[in-house]
Image (cartoon, rainbow, N blue to C red; front, top):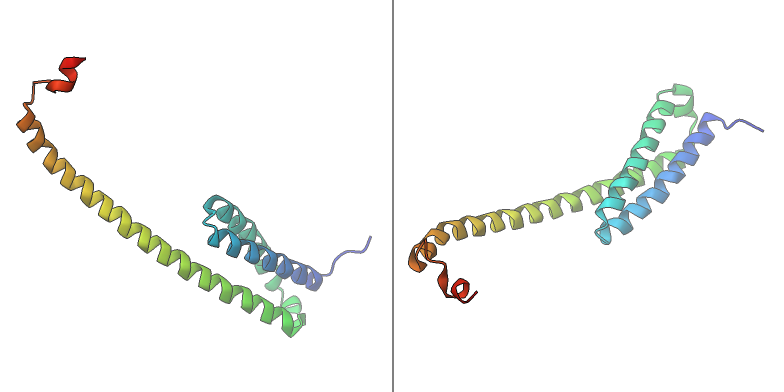
Length: 129
């Protein structure tokens, strides 16, 4: 059994990141948040391993240029996905604020309706019971 050289490991890990990046794009489009988080965890482990390998100058300077191009493409795609997620989170935050505002308005109206119906009287529906 032949041991894999560090440069071969980097190439294999870049390939794995490309696959995961494709899965992330599909999961993001399908709003599969749980699966997306799991995929991102797997990608983070690969990035950690790549960081360790790339700290070796022999490995870093021994890589073919296409590896850097592929890594750059992955990084660019991640930037686009992060921008999309940020936009989605902003929209979701605005929707949540609108819901909270509506709930607050309802809370202020509730006492007025309670006083109209009589606070202690159960109302006709309960009386038929």
